Length: 338
Image (cartoon, rainbow, N blue to C red):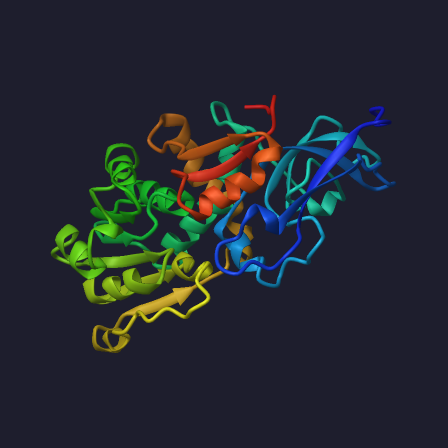
């Protein structure tokens, strides 16, 4: 077992409930000795951390104050006191925003290694982000070959994964919305979107009608609000809405006024359904089987914004909330395995 005497660990605690956008003052870095694993547990030194939009929702009450924040994490077993976890093994767990974590075998998932697939992929298209997109397309929308999609927040982690997966599933035309001209270009030039628009450029209903004049069959909603209203307007009869998130509302204490056209759901026989990806974790292996061959062939690429250094995790989170990432926002420890 490794000698941990004198080693120090860092955790990030939430110290206050934010009003509107969180600020660095709502967090604190707390230093302590690296914990010793008890019998039946192992110590993991974390290498990759995920910062996600859902963390903002949890800050309003689900995260305990003055305690380490939850989150998806990949690390290497540094010291083990259980035969079920070998030192050096790479594992996924959810103990979140800390440099070191003590885990039981039941709290981790061993990550398979595939030729040519970096560890960061398990934070993006092979992780909860990709699984969200996969479940939304295959289980909620039940996307059929030749159908047309509209995806909001298309340049984010789930949005880029949705576009890439929908393309290899045989979608005919994929349209996305994003928050800048640079992101619009990225979606069209790198991710495979047929068209995209900057939602700042005008009413979403008009922008979507221009990008998809014949309408769409499926809307993957990461935003809510005005863009949900536009999608309801643009969906064809028997269209489906997959509700994943409401980024437009996370930092706004006032309720959204849109959508104001819910009657169209009845008139056009639309279906709207939301879901939590935690209820579909049994599909993880199915996701690997579908995505990995496309990653290895290059047909699916990785869309990641990587921030180096655990000391920058709060900055990465706040930057993600303000749209400063393209694809999945990931924090990486120095020297992390590729």
